[in-house]
Image 1 (cartoon, rainbow, N blue to C red):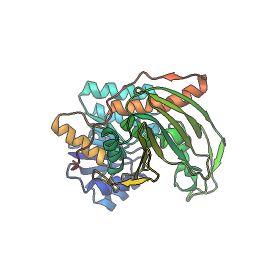
Image 2: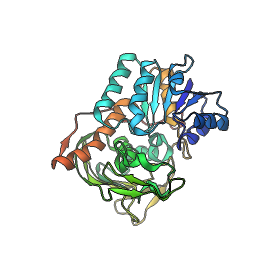
Image 3: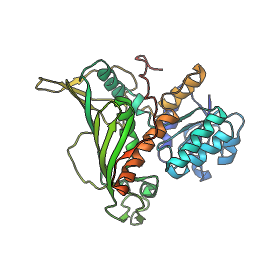
Image 4: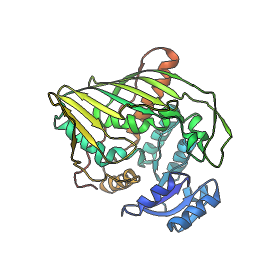
Length: 358
């Protein structure tokens, strides 16, 4: 299908490069609020047209809009694309609040359009191998999990780090989608959340170029800790932070009645996948059972286009994205209220990928 990309910032080159390897994706135009950036990306990757954002959204040949804008623009661009009759695939998070995310879901249903949302790393070799092992009983019944993303913050390396500390950013809404989507993929739908959060430094100084020395006023919590209870009874401990200089914690582990599964970094597509069964004294690295172990951002878009052609739901659909957003927002809601937050949302976790790939 013919795809137009809105947002030509830091993440766009990898999408443009990987898209060239998927026959499902034909990028015909790019757009950005900065026209010179769109022109640069078009020239860099041989895209036929660099357009204004409104012109791209209204272009009659474009069937799917890939939305790579900053978080605050995700829902407005998604809605504009759906109103123009396009299918939409969006970078994470699905929205910065539940209200705007619900509006996108409702509009997609009204218009009969597909909507998908990153991260698509859960469709890669590493997470799919973990899903295969859990389903075949390698660790028995899942009992619990842990998920840790701890870093000192994005102002040390990102060229435009301000939005990471605005509403819609922070470690939970920026990096949390990788971890929470993985937990939902492996453990199923969540039931309730308990959380505590804080802003550690209200003002942060950029040390990356080209904005070195400029300061950022922090609008969203930068250290969040808490727990998720899943409908199957499994309990997950979660810490997401931009306030940690060093640690020795794993990315994700799944604990079962018959063993433990070491899940690879959910921000990547490959391994290693580690398994240690009850009674064993050593961890074993398990062979990957599925393809897509390298950098394949755009896999979720290709899978959505394949789903459109086959007339089935896409794996990374709006209901999944909304449920993940609902879980993430519940951590701060719980912190503010001092109580558990019961989740109203639900979804069908992504079906396993075919072992042979798309």
